[in-house]
Length: 388
Ligand SMILES: O=C(O)CCC(=O)C(=O)O
Image (tube, rainbow, N blue to C red; front, side):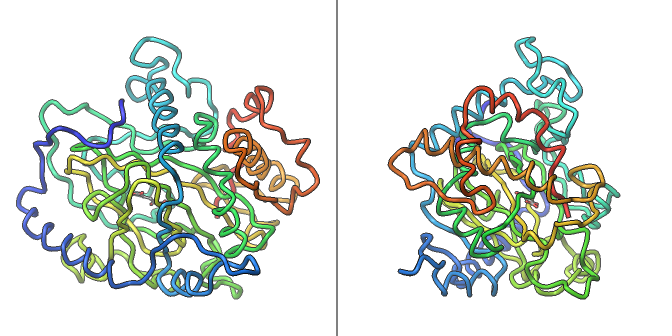
């Protein structure tokens, strides 16, 4: 698989649904423009995330930070991911890549590459991931010469890409994480979402969390958030859609909402529209999903999430991204070392930046220098993801 921003042409569309889809995309773009939830990352003079950003994030459940990653960083990511994706299994379950070399993922124990038929919905209406995607998305027909299956998601992505690790250590993004989840914030997991032109599958409507919904302590921020960094940008047609404010509602009845709409084009949803280098913060409790990519534009999202420490500490959970387990302080610390390595990896590549100081590792920086030895310890790091 080779990533490039745009295909020369794509010969697929939504068939009988295309006209309705076009109208939906246009109306969604208009609603997105009216939300007031986008702009550069800004902090007040005391270092706090600007109050208007915090207000818009909690009102909408997502906020688009514009211009976070510059051209050099985007070039690093593209080159790095093209190297990593070329080393993925040539077909689902294969041990070798397209050139017959051992695939990067071959002896990983933790989940890595996820495959789907082109333009299909691999999750909707299934019991996968605790059945949190209850409604099936429309599946456009793929081109006759399309590959049988395509990688649509890669978990544990930081072990395959140093450029993604450096994004993970971005000082302003980590400052945002602290502003939203507290200075002792913890990791969740990291992923790549890949939607190639005319091939990318849909991600059926869902809310991310599977624990805590009925807890007396539950609130609008309980399940943390994901950052979604865009390599090529994204449009209404290939981007993620979010129902604004749905993170405040508790668990919503997705099946009933789709049935009431009579379509998977939920009328309240709005698209995340991003330029290359924009990074969205998306509350994991929002109702969100994305459509099959019949456009000529690639979407590549570098996805990484963070939690409040109180939402994971001593919580027994798992089953979706990692095996069920109790997340004690030692496990959280071990998983959070990725943040420490990421900060150091970033410091080495972008020495003019002031590195973020991650409070749980403050004073331990010398123990977490990024080098070949550290890199060798990343294999299967995502066995310790903190899924809730
Ligand atoms: O990027 C997408 O299309 C799906 C992302 C998503 O569902 C998630 O991060 O939970």
